[in-house]
Length: 178
Image 1 (tube, rainbow, N blue to C red):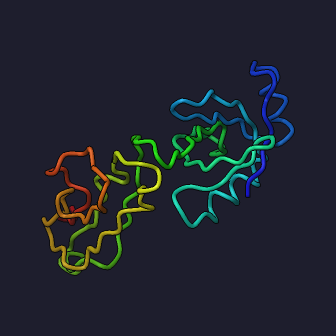
Image 2 (cartoon, rainbow, N blue to C red):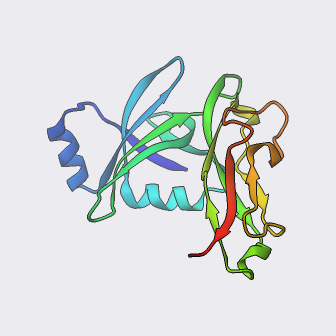
Image 3 (cartoon, rainbow, N blue to C red):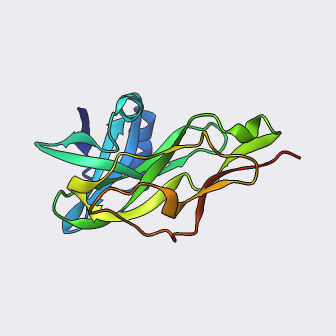
């Protein structure tokens, strides 16, 4: 479990001091919950984010434990280090919007026919309760040939989950190499 500290002061000066000490500045929020300004050790956060098995993971702030997902983050464009992260608390019985990743498995037939596999959407927007939140949409692309694509309507959607992206939006496809 990732442990963090709650920031008392939220100004630039204190944020810079925390960053110098190896902390990552974070905001933790949810519907009906007051925003929490927090900080985590950068290396601990990266290890936890890479090792997580689900879309969500647990963080401990003070004496409370929150089940969170990574909603957004900012990276330094030159150094490629993480500067700031927004964590959203997953509430089991609250309907909310989430970004669920798309994972492609398999090797398309179209690659042998001089095609290139392209992701059109890496994440789909869904609306569901926290307890129904899928970890990812896994799509098998073995049967895709050149100029074929997978649309949102072709994806198997779990019960009690509504995809907000249009049914005719392409998620992945094989295009002709130039």
